[in-house]
Length: 213
Ligand code: PRP
Image 1 (cartoon, rainbow, N blue to C red):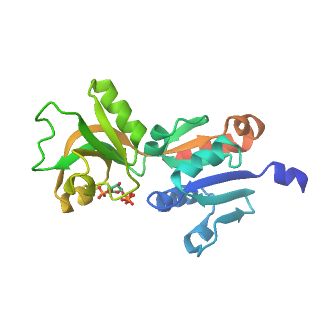
Image 2 (cartoon, rainbow, N blue to C red):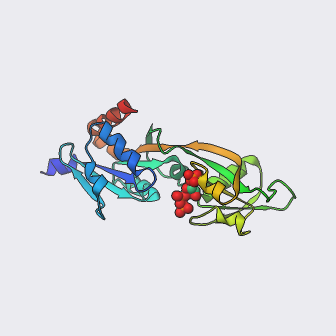
């Protein structure tokens, strides 16, 4: 029993946007997790056959659980990995949850006019700061928690840095992409100690997932 618990692999999945694709890829790899599809308010699910626990948490918390070893493996977007500088192995680009980071603003707002310091609203202050630092452009970063597209419309900022997937949110709020920053997709991350202690089981999971990509 103790061995079984020690040997258990704990996997943290990001709730929301990439949840469905993450479940789909484990199922295609032959790791059953159908319970997660009819989950109600439950947050932890056990797969007896493979001795795996799945948990569903917010993106930034996936990193925290994996960094501290409370989860061995995490599935999370590259956007979150870029924003929070934490310590683990990034092992697979899962090729789903594809979107991009972009600078956007309203059609009318001429972001490139004038010499005053521009204000950038974003949920990703570190990504935005780093992008403009590399360009040598001095900007003021305003951190907001969501519905970022409103910021230039209401005059809170000159532009935003945000993720763009279909482009619908930008379009429906009268914003356009000014600059592409980089492409994003979901990644598998692994706790550094788990990679040594549970290497056989974790490598087996990595191989199964890689085989169906
Ligand atoms: C994200 C992002 C954009 C939108 C982009 O927000 O911040 O607002 O999705 O997707 P689209 O290009 O397909 O329209 P999210 O849905 O995570 O909600 P939030 O505004 O609460 O952050």
